[in-house]
Image (cartoon, rainbow, N blue to C red):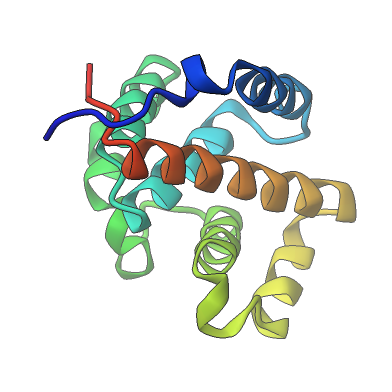
Length: 145
């Protein structure tokens, strides 16, 4: 697959703003593992090879297990994820697939059992950000490195 337009070169001001969002969200209440689970799960849904490669490598570096990464796509079918992580992943999926049915009250209420409003905001914003990166990488054929 040939890489298309390089948006970092053609729109450096936009990339600078995106990196500003990355920096702002780095100060969130989410744990490093939670941040990577968000990035990997959304990237799986969006079939973003570039981001999957980047964030699975990063997840492993910070202590995530290969087994959990291998089954992340089927997280509902395993006890390898905590109830809190499952609430987080459900919210990530509904935000990523927002056009299907929005974010359900049940999913939001389940997240609220584990997270305060600020952390729910962190989850939503982290999901929006990785979805933006996924859409850039997929639409421009950004190559796995």
